[in-house]
Amino acid sequence: MNLNELQALYDFSDRTILVTGGAGVLGSEIACALVGLNANVVILDRDQQLAQQVIEQFPKVVKGRAARVYGDVLNVESLQQANEIIKTEFGTMDILINAAGGNHPSATTKPDLSFFDLPLDALRHVNDLNLLGTILPCQVFGRGMAERGEGVILNISSMNAFRPLTRIPAYSAAKAAINNFTQWLAVHMAQNYSPKIRVNAIAPGFFITKQNRFLLTDQDSGELTPRGQSVIAHTPMGRFGTPEDLLGATMWLISPASAFVTGAVIPIDGGFSAFGGV
Ligand SMILES: NC(=O)c1ccc[n+]([C@@H]2O[C@H](COP(=O)([O-])OP(=O)(O)OC[C@H]3O[C@@H](n4cnc5c(N)ncnc54)[C@H](OP(=O)(O)O)[C@@H]3O)[C@@H](O)[C@H]2O)c1
Image (cartoon, rainbow, N blue to C red; front, side, top):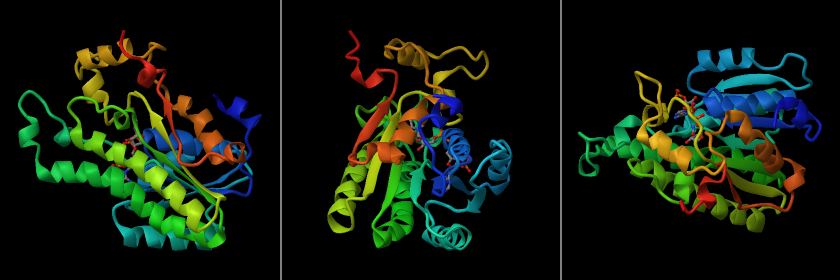
């Protein structure tokens, strides 16, 4: 859905929304759309220069405000500092979108790097970034939601969570854990704090971005690799996703339109996860 179509359906005026990894490819697309839907949007990322460049691309005539804040999703102290800054600037933070995450080439098997030799620090980094990098922001920013008795959290899972893809064991395991954690936190928040706190996830299929370009396309020719061809062959809609493809489901999950939905993980994958391959 493009912004014009979304504007007919959603309006996040007076809502403050934090997007971790908001300077990244998918996070920035979501943040940009939220600005166009009148939200106050705060981008949390480590690279503040990039975050500023992203903000400069946002639509200009909007009701809300866009801001950036430094934060490392694996450093609790930096998240707490970010939380204080957001409280001072915006008051409450209503919605948290955990978009920081990703795979890394060093945790990916290759002809000259077998599973048995994947380095511990690479495995730990990918596991921590995706799993703890989601849990820690939920702890720091979810506390205020628990105190107020309302809020929405949206995590970003992946196709790997349902059925692991070859070559990327740590990423697959961490995303599977995100599905489990999403369900766990949804139940925990509803039972212990408020049924008005909802926790869901989206599971994107294949979107060519900086973290998977090296797997899906040939660096020199730009042609699809055999893996990229296989993805297309197993995607009934016959194409990769574009960041815009995430917007409709994202806005639905963070808006009151999904008020009775919690603990759900929604595939956005052109049918990849539904297809048995025959
Ligand atoms: N692209 C896909 O096809 C796809 C498919 C399924 C799921 N996903 C998931 O979607 C999410 C966004 O992916 P993307 O493709 O947009 O990746 P991306 O462009 O790499 O964006 C991720 C952002 O998170 C930031 N980040 C990394 N580590 C961080 C940390 N410790 N603290 C704060 N920020 C940090 C990155 O900054 P740096 O550049 O500084 O590291 C980057 O700005 C990820 O969870 C990814 O796993 C992607």
